[in-house]
Length: 140
Image (cartoon, rainbow, N blue to C red; front, top):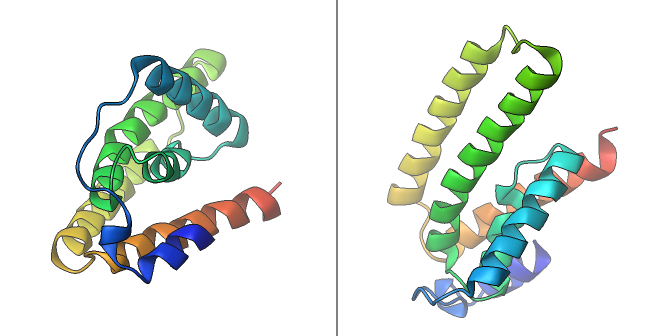
């Protein structure tokens, strides 16, 4: 988060926005490691994926934000499948959670398209990383 805030001073140009070819073994290994880490910590995989994409130069801020969404969706579906398989039921609050996810996705997309450009997108990603880091450190 601190590195992203530091680079935000230079704007979005401090990260590559041009897509590059990612080696398949690196992508598969990273995806498996992130999936395992997010499952062990109970944290969404996008929190780990976005910084990896940025720091490895595999995507810029907008690309990282866009790529994290389907990754998070697949991670969430896998998590729900695991809960259903282990407990033979899903939480009764699931429809409420789904509505909150849709509302948050709509709000985030609106903010991202209309307001969060360049350095502000990096600042937003940094804030999200700080919140996730705080959750990992403070919640038992």
